[in-house]
Amino acid sequence: MVDLNPQERLQEVLRGFRACVEEARDSFAEGFPPGTNREPAVRRAATGVELSPDGNRPGGDAALRSVREEMGDCRRCKLHERRTHIVFGVGNPRAELMFVGEGPGEDEDRKGEPFVGRAGQLLTEIITRGMGLRRADVYIANVVKCRPPGNRNPEPDEIAACQPFLAKQIDVVSPRVVVALGKFAAQTLLATATPISKLRGRWFDFRGRKLMPTFHPSYLLRNPADKRLVWEDIQLVMGELGLPLPLPLPRSVKPGP
Ligand code: SF4
Image (cartoon, rainbow, N blue to C red; front, side, top):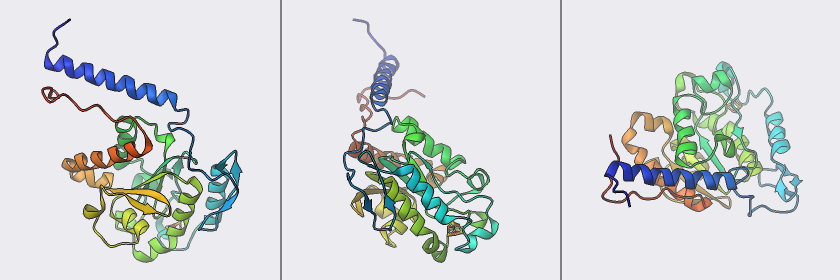
């Protein structure tokens, strides 16, 4: 048996974990096993969205298109005045996991896709490197679909105007787990004024689905020490979805520089 130094042992552990994640990912055709919590019949969601069946799954693509068509060239709130694009949402229309953020920033407004700036890169890392999924496996949307000027916070009337579209997206995608990224997403979905620091890391019921609030990636860019807390929350989500969790490192092995 070859004697390994701590650095080599760590590399062995990481190699084993990577192989484990890749094997699990390969075995899930769409990143997650087919939904087991889907309702088999045509149903009308609480938001009034018709969910047509596709096999035994809601009709994600077409139903999402119909929500987008209903939104049209939306001018329901003043955020329409300075937007470049409506940033509707992106990802797997049948995702088991949905991330909800606050609103588009400059990059998202320019490209018309949520979470593509620096905060988006961090979210993508959480999904791919942290969870072992592809970004296309999950669905990503925001509370407001147009960029608040200067990246200011969305105002209550803007959230109220746009929130029904988010509710319809959630009903259509019908994820098992919703991760609310940051204060606005968590407080909007849970209809509470409780600070995100007190909400994060706890499971909530969201119309029959599990909802996990955690910090927004843009907060993590300013407060990288709190990545540890988000990782704890994400591991709870992974456990709930049955995703393989990283192996704990042996106590004696410390990651190298
Ligand atoms: Fe419409 Fe929402 Fe944009 Fe306001 S933020 S204009 S409600 S799409």
